[in-house]
Length: 302
Image: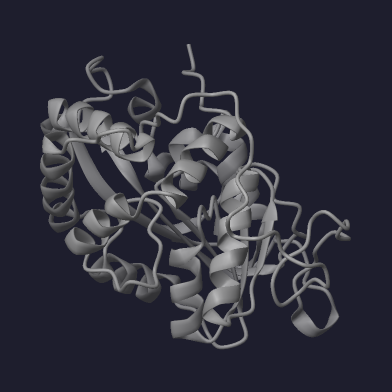
């Protein structure tokens, strides 16, 4: 059976707790080599951002879709480096709220909106590149998510995904969501060409250091640190059973949806509630606002 993915409400709680935990962000930044302004959502480090940026092959003026964008830090950094326009999509309203706030604080234009791995709301062929960092395992229907990436990419556009894969897909000690991850097969089946999947052992070594520190901390009454410690313990228990990978591929030069005149992304009409910094005209909520939630703040990245 396909393992159930955490819900949007579940992630709302996780992101809200992270916003109040400077201690967790400090640990992640230190190990990942990230600057203070970049809010990490997963364990992609500074060198990894450089590798991903190179693999995307963006040109100034392109539109980058950051799919499952989380707090928006990775997409904002890559868009700034490459001079591209950024659209970030996540199904967590709290993640989108925080991403908009980060863009506003950094003075950068970006469009962050609520959407799904398999339903972005973007027009066919509207994106020059698609980025998905450590999130494809949460797609309820992975084939639909790969298909959506293929649909929104312009001819010749690039997709880059980072994730983890089980060394042995039949090893039941590995979380079910990761046992079904096969980036190469998913991209190929969706119609992509020049598919390449590379193992990143250096990234994995960095993760070990993160999880060792996380498993040893005293979280006190910080729910984000409690979740972080639990994740560290679980991750170390299966560490040798999982490999860290980055996949890249290219959309065929024919058969993709058309760009609209002028090459701008085809986006749906925005509602009054779905606005952002730099693109929409509505005011952002205060950073201190927190969504109410009914779920525990625990999350398992695997």
